[in-house]
Length: 269
Image (cartoon, rainbow, N blue to C red; front, side, top):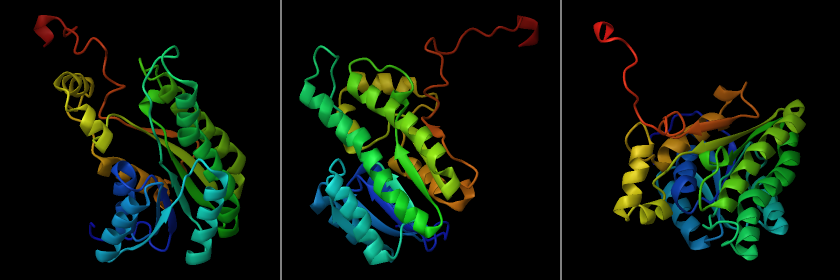
């Protein structure tokens, strides 16, 4: 765990999908910044390893196995956090999944699964976290969306739809709860080196396409998304709500045509 910064000192936080990737990096970053962290994942053994690593490094983490698409599990997650740590300041709803396919190819079961994990979990997190944050005098909810929610990815119709839903759900939640001191924001990562992405990038053609798409010339790291989440969780972002923060290495800014010819006359170049 990195040296403690105090950015989130005395804050009680929950990170879902904390067993690996962005969630693991964020749980460790929040703890490094001084927060108490409830690390949540459906893979209980994974999240126990993450919590142990945090605690062994001098942080404070509690592992919790939960299916964040199930109301009873989410309600219990919030109750457990409040019961053990005295309240809730930050919820990072990060758990997610993907099933590739066009509308014709995708099964109804896979559609329902992706929508449950990616969208229903965000709704449930807010549903049960808002009362706890209200009791605390406010808080910050952060939702993992994606750049896929800002454009139409081919061959991933349900993932793109789910992440677009997360972005607008974030906006609606921010409007509903701003008066209670609760800020709600989303993060839209580009291609991040999580375990599933690393497996996909073992295909040289996929790696080449993805590297070329990012102006910065590389894929993102989970720790870079964790840094954005820590800022949104902190009081330093106190005037930011209802936003989707794009962290994509210049992917969306880049023209699909690449670098065009220099428009200046030769004498001015």
